[in-house]
Length: 61
Image (cartoon, rainbow, N blue to C red; front, side, top):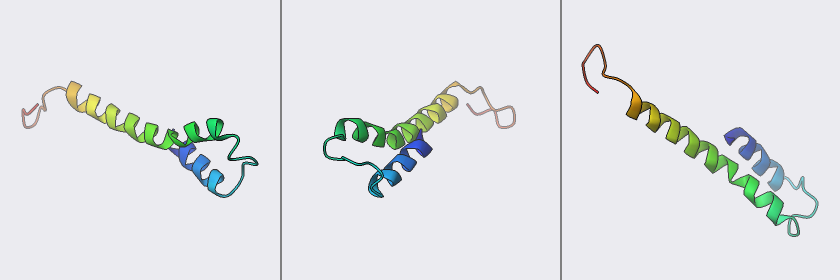
């Protein structure tokens, strides 16, 4: 998601889309993919930390 969002933002600012003002409903939501990808990675990491077991070496949870 993050990589696709960054690529889409880059193409958007390079002028790859013909009618940016008229097609904002199709182009703007795809720019949010970058934020969505970062938030998904943070949620995955938080889930991992919350669900992991007790450390066998230091016995801390």
